[in-house]
Amino acid sequence: RYSAVQTHPETPMHSFTLTEHKHIAHLVLSRPEAMNTMHPTFWRELDDVLTRIHREGTARVLVISSTGKHFSAGMALETFAGAIQMDDQSPEGRAAIFDLLTDMQSTFTKLERLRIPVIAAIQGGCIGGAVDMVTACCIRYATADAFFCIQEINIGMVADVGTLQRLPKLIPEAVVKELAYTGRRLGADKALGYGLVNAVFDTPEALLAGALQCAAEIAAKPPVAIWGTKQAIHYTRDHSVHDALEQMGWLQGAIWSNTHVRESVAAMKEKRAGQFTPLSALVGFSEQG
Image 1 (cartoon, rainbow, N blue to C red):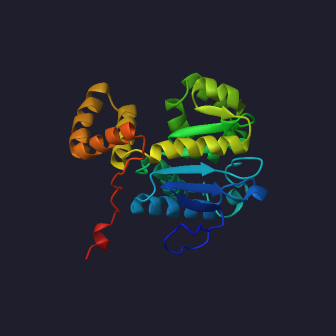
Image 2: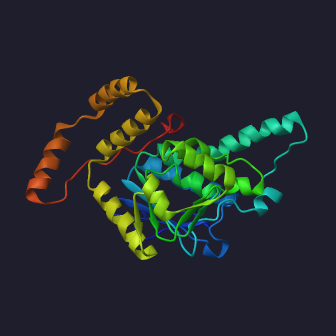
Image 3: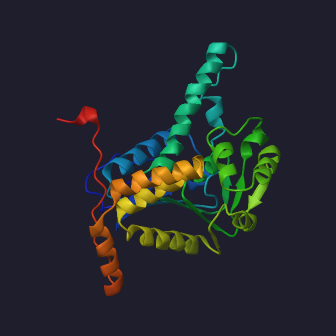
């Protein structure tokens, strides 16, 4: 379901609601009765939404929040009994697991590779697959009662959609191991201390207000400069300082804009909002002509 600010009709979604206002896209998990669990429809709808946001370029930041007691209880357990077929009876079946997981991983990787920053507003439980999802976001805010749990070990499997790859980049490795080996909960206060979350709020309402305030500040900056900043930070995370500095030179040379700098300075002096060019819409090669 999309708000009236959308300029074209879309197919209603079952897992989320999506609005865009003042260049802020807001995706809300909307199945509180099911603790916002993740099922094949969830994955398909999220993949479609992220693809469209990435291509259109009208939003300058994405906020992901939730409804109900928990942010998300992760993968719906009934999915393993039917919708997802994990054949461990033959080498061919086990090999197919690789392609299945690659497909699932790619959806959360879209959060990381999205041309705009992503802010997760986390209330209550962030469990299993939800940890996979929020670790791919740029900024995480939480309520005081929020907790994170690598649930997969509690149901006899290894977390496999990004938690074990991204979480050690965010908090100490020994803490990741403790959580991953035991399935214990990490509360919001400790998550804040480790740097997993940026701030903790008393209520869901204050949480969302804080997330949207940060989003508004980001949306007020030149979109291409924000794009470049996200590119540089992620490249630096995975490369040496030398390589990252070299990449920074090429990146800055590609996107530098005297106009944006002058407009930013003028807007600050005049205490007004800056006027900046949006990101270009993306059109695939096969769609040309």
